[in-house]
Image: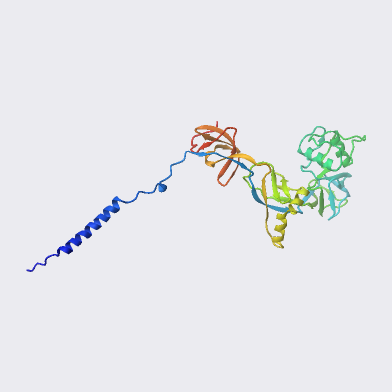
Length: 344
């Protein structure tokens, strides 16, 4: 049998290949680079720094203008219509007579709070304040104190044309003679009564349309409490807390602003939403903390912990995942692990 010898060169080459492969694998195993520190899991944070920030809580919110709201007015007393002083589509001014029932005059009054009880000396309340403000606007001389005095009783008795039977001021003036209307000047939209008609209490008499314009802001839910302004080209315009703007000068300033004119020009005959910058009139200093650091929250009151010590705070708002608080204590950091902690 013939034996075929292996060539030394081929054997050597094959051996070298094996060594290279094995060495490469070993090198890959031994020399693999470590995982970068940046890819390691970050350590859990136990606290977060407290930031102090002066904020005006500025928001851009929608503003709409509303006119022509209709209010239904019912008969306050039972009886027969003996006089009718208004006409369909005609004006009705605060302080003017609407009708007479059994000879008793019903006078329209535009007050921020309707008068809902008999007027007697010493009576106090928001309805009294509103009555005094409107009587003063109508030209009567009296002080707006929220408490009924002789001047208040005399003014209302004079407006209603009533007296005590001896020419004096009645000790008690019935509220049923005062009919609330929503604005100082309204238009009679419907007239549901006629001369000689018998009325029952709460039976519809007429409806009126408020001809005055008002601006209504769409207020965000999580806004910091405080006096607010709209900042436009015509100035920083104060606005009520409820977002309903009725002051004619403020409404005029809004519509005279560059912002509103640009909006109206761009809008043309189409529809759109006018937005305005709405912010605190006076910026405040607040502490900014993570929401998770707060515990024991009751309304606007809460607690935080700093190095295990518990501090009471007041929540004034939140925005973009941050909570704004105030505190009587100096705070530089807040604990993030508050499990088991309680306000005390």
